[in-house]
Image (cartoon, rainbow, N blue to C red; front, side):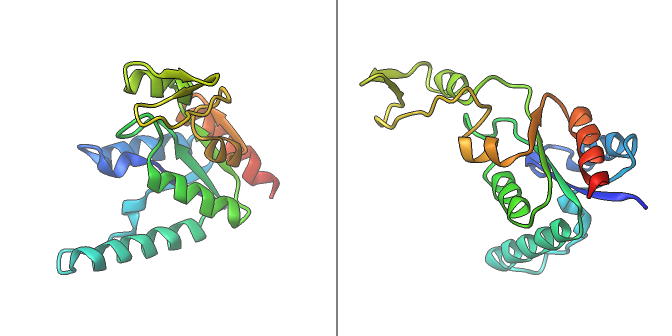
Length: 172
């Protein structure tokens, strides 16, 4: 039996999301996994209003996650120094369900990416702060501590994530 893995990440926003999903699915197959991409729900939202479409996509993605044994999450920075908010939610939902979550990220730490994003940060009372005076956490993690600590592991690439998930899900 093939183990289904939800492929969380901002790939649905890429110029060719289907090609991106196929690349991830090929990687999953190498480890006996079936990669399930958010667009696999096959939704037709063309006749829905924006809010109705959003709700339909949300519900379809929840059903897809519910049908899977684990989540492989692309934690790369997206539209700023932090990861995609939808991916963060999907990770949290999976963790709450007791599913293994393995993230991947080839980028530097959250603090380093935030420095780069703002072209530097100020020091205030020993902490680094953004232009709004808000402290930027420094735990040497790839993203916010709730995301980084929520994953069982964060590895460097999708191949390593699929490999680890195949072993984590085989134990269950």
